[in-house]
Length: 228
Ligand SMILES: [Zn+2]
Image (cartoon, rainbow, N blue to C red):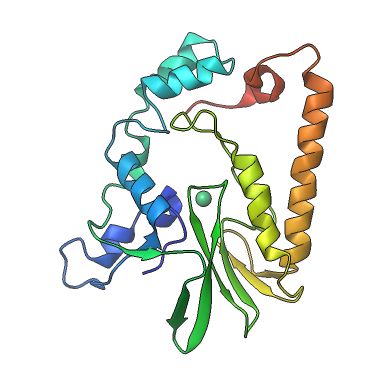
């Protein structure tokens, strides 16, 4: 079973499907990148990494979240990931960028992507112009690009924009099969549009909000963001 990345809506049932000790299931190996596998294991260990706990509350506070109720909600959100991903297969096979994988008579190449998750794997069939894009390129919604407490100096947006460049050489009539929404053509245009959108958004935020300097919390019209 190939999993593109470690987010709960992708990895959550992997153990259940692969094996979980039940012989009636597939009894197959999980194929995933090293970055996604290890990140999933760390978060599933339930120490609050990335999704909640004291360090996450401090991370948000450092970026301007000040109300105690929201900070407490973050502190107490320690089992967010393990609730959604209760177990992960103890063994896996590693996907690396550029790997060739043959599935049902069709050849696919692994395309690593960064910024949305640690080491996302998309699959591309050049011969048939098919792209299993996972969460890297979606047709209708913009993807989550976040700085997490575990890597506070990270620049995931730069990584994501750089990763989008990898789709620019694909033929325009490539059929993308995304993880959310319907299949679509025009992955190159879509990638360029997404990249332009992010850059425009960043420029606008800089112009409007950073003179004088204010916190991240204040400049993201985030007063409506709920801390669940
Ligand atoms: Zn995702």
